[in-house]
Each structure stands twice: as structure tokens, then as C-alpha cells.
Length: 78
Image 1 (cartoon, rainbow, N blue to C red):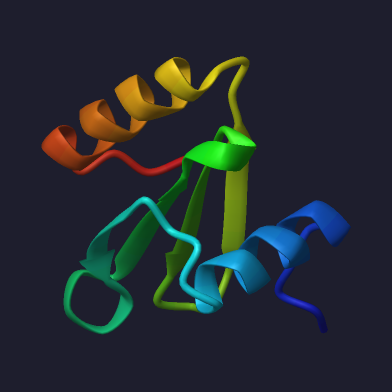
Image 2 (tube, one colour; image 1 turned 180 degrees about the vertical axis):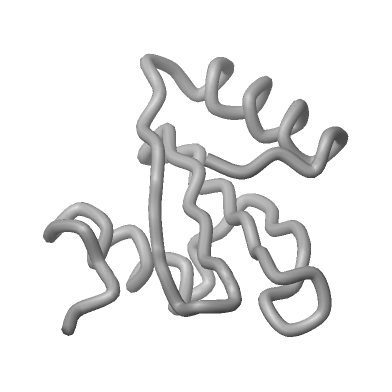
């Protein structure tokens, strides 16, 4: 079973694994969740301790940054 919802999720994960993150927060092993911000694609990605990967795409980089800041300050999950 593939942990990615679709090809976009797989592409975003590949970008994250290749160092194209603008920021990251949390730890799958320590916190049970990890978030990554990829501003170029206006996306926030998330992986949980079960290996499930989700993402959300925003209308602008500013919207993605604001949502990411909110999520990291409030331990938010998709």
C-alpha cells in the first residue's frame, strides 16, 4: 500500500526529502507528527507516526505561511 494519496503528495514528499523545505516542525518518533512547509508550491505536508502522509495546498505563499505558523503554535493536525 502506498502511503501517498496521489502523485502530488508523492512529489511533495520527494521535494522534502531532497532538502526543498522552507521549514519543518515536530518529529514523527518524538511527537507523533511532523510538518513541513514548501513555500514554492504553497504547501504544508504532514506525516504521522503511522506513516500516513497528507498535504494541503494554499492559494498563496502568504496563506501557506500563515497556516503553518498557526499549526506549529497550536499543535494542529490536518
